[in-house]
Image (tube, rainbow, N blue to C red):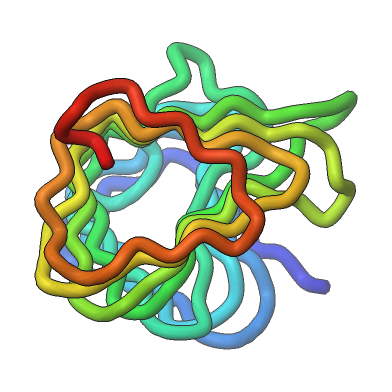
Length: 171
């Protein structure tokens, strides 16, 4: 598919809405914008702090990381509105993605650590997951680590993911 790359951008506090089935890659530090993903895949590539300040992932859309991120952190706020948090493998193998910012479930949503190439990826969620909805964990060839304090009240569904819980409040 087609891909659009974004390099250093100051969004001047505006919103950027991703539509269409193509991909958008944030490749350098970008600030001061809200990212709304309505379709396709939006991801940060090999860099931390490239996503919007407040990110919204709507149903049928994907948000994630490609390749190992230096420092390994995505600290931004993410609202999952029926969309999917996902990882994509980098050149030469697996990806380690750490989501350290808060994740709010505004609809039942998905967290998927699989990749199209079936290499082993690792998604570490150290920010808490909250909201009145549930989450479905997916990923047959990868690992999901829940290390934060989670308070979402909807169900937890597992579709063949390997999930590791790091604290009593992370389940």
